Image (cartoon, rainbow, N blue to C red):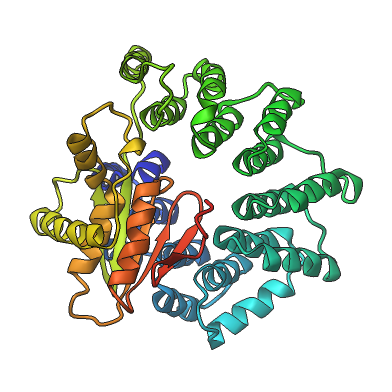
Length: 435
């Protein structure tokens, strides 16, 4: 059932569950997890209530589901109702507080004290990870020092969290120091993930030569993750890196990784390099993807306004109110264009004409989720629109979120994507455009 959880395939998961001869607490918890991960918390709560027996694991899965949607009051309610609260439940709740900046409550205080007294590095790493997603390097480093004062030894996961935070902040100096201290101060061997974090940091900060040298000098055969970290930075660092990108993409594509094709396609789409036949290059990429049987992973966004939750896919046609949502998005787009919004058609991997490229951008699930959130929050002044997306948000969607938070005064927008948490208010994002 785990595969259904990852792909949000609710009907298939329910059919599999119904076909089981024995439905024990594990299978019930798996089904609950599918509902929670898909953002359908109404079904998740119903499954939880129907369970013949509940344990701390099931309660924590439900708790995490509310946390993932930033539904903090509901998460606190689940936490308060738990007869026995283990360290995992405490940690999930504290992570929620750290990620969304929730006001401290009695439940939060109880959870924080439990985590701080815990000697398990997993709990501390969870706290640091929450601040990593917010990009708060200062507080992440403070937690890192505090865990040592409490007698908790950092591990490899701790260092990954710190390196990721350095990458979000483009702090190369601190990142290099963390990477050095891993071995010299803590005897933690650098694994593939640590190198990948360093490659990402160096590349996104503009140190492309150093990043490429590090990939080649790793004590491992480079995987698609390292090459794609470098490839993604080639796009963000400007048009002068097309040739480097082609060299890197060739390495990544040898590993049959669909993300490499998409990244390279985006680089070509945004290129103004007259030495490259863009249309021919894009068609060649699409043909290679077809030959390899590779397809782009569909984007799925879950939007929550109050207690209402809606799930939308890229180019969604299944939502019962999709026509109203599309109309709201069209109105929003017109308003934003008056505020200076210019669609980033350079991000469209299609080679389409400008009008068609703009239409493709409008189908992104995050935009549909935003329009859905606005539509369902019109009667709620100062409503908080909370969106969760399974992929990294594109630059065009990010631009739209920023401007939308400006024109809808008092309406806060939070997007939790595959990379980090973005809090949009008054035209500004907490990530400072680094993600």
